[in-house]
Length: 245
Image (cartoon, rainbow, N blue to C red):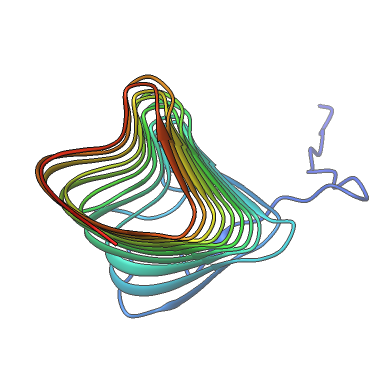
């Protein structure tokens, strides 16, 4: 009888890595290096019950899932690599606190989705629908945030945004029920630069552009302090009640 021994051959230069420690896990410092693909299939890493983890994606690392790149209930992510998902780049059931120096992509829905999204962005955030989607979005942006299909930043409730980078969306750069915006960069949308269902409070020293309709639109009140440029195809500012400085 012939005995055959089969082994695994590791080729030099191949990088196969995981995020450690493995999920599900709570209250942990998680580090992702190399290439992580569907460690928690169909997601790159994490489960929707993970809470209070501090996840670090190292420079040059990637975390990828056909569902979402990274998933948790409540947690923090510091990304210096690439996070991508077929639906969401990062999805949190409740609160996500994210500092991004790299790239976060949601190929089907949103780059970042959460009830409360606290985001500081120095890199690139791109969603097929919204760049960032939340009930409450607290965003400081030095990089680029893009909503390919709808809003760059979308908040069902309140969007608190400080922008010195670029925010753009097919519909609005920022779309929210209440929008509080300080802008020294560029905000643009295919219809509205900033759109608010109730109140927009804007301090602008940069550019805000609504290519199709208005630069700033509020269905109720808008308070605008402007030392930059606000422009729209129809109106620079359109609101029932407008306060301008």
